[in-house]
Image 1 (cartoon, rainbow, N blue to C red):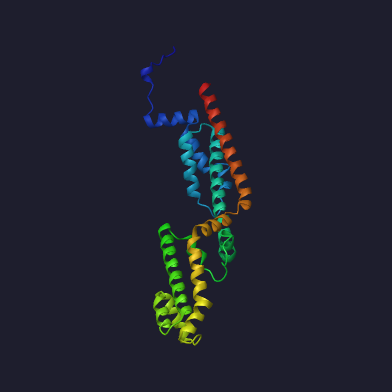
Image 2 (image 1 turned 135 degrees about the vertical axis):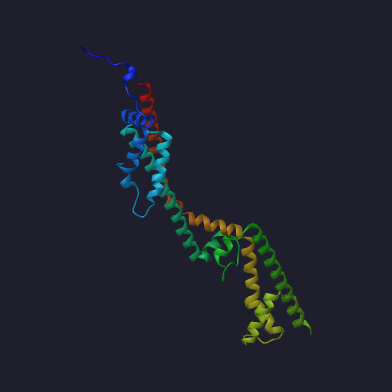
Amino acid sequence: MTKTIATTDVTPLPAAAAKAAKARATGGYANVRFNAMKHGVLSRYTVLSHEDGDEYRSLLEALAREHQPSGATEAHLVEELAGAIWRKRRVLQAEGATINQGLRGSARDVERVVATAVPFERSFGGVTTELRDLVELTPKEAEERRRVAAQDLAATQKAQGILLRGGPDAYDQALQALEDDSRDWWLEHVDEGAYPEAAEGLLGFIDDHLYKACLREDKEARHAGAIKAQAFGEGLQAHRLEKLNRYESHLDRKFERTLAMLLKLKEMRRGS
């Protein structure tokens, strides 16, 4: 005689066990997420030895949480998305490194950068300020530098005019007209015996050194914005970034195609 089993005789599974059974039966997200991170076919080749594997796994986990892949194909597509993002990160690093290399080259050839930035400005030769000092100026600092440079140049021209007019007090008046830094520089030359401490010596010092230095400083201060733009423009080296830009576009297209495939597959699964 066959015994009929009532539904009340079936022992219900605990909630946790039922959830695990359902996940195993449907190939659920939790299992696939584990496989994608631990046993992914692509992951082991995507992250280079010097790169942060934990950072890549965090990216992969975030994409898995967002798309909740079901099955090996969807898990593979999620890995493809992570790989595209990870490679694009490398492109941006390479781009920054290329620009920095170009800026370093500009810093080694300051005279050319400055002269090119203001091609119609005459008498821009001689010793220049560090390019780093110019490109790191804030707008407020640049304005203060322009003010100080103009003041130094005006004081030097005033002292030069006094000496050219001459007179018994010309030397003392010219010395008084100079800015403190210029006066200290003059006294250093006197101490070294380069010029006599007299009107003709001071005039020679102004003609040989001080006026040229002040004129140069004034021009650099007035054209600091153009010099900064020239340095960064040359540092950009657009011709060297062209290949990187093409590769970045390729990664963007690959990401878009992979995402479209993933969404289409999920839509087909829902429809079936």
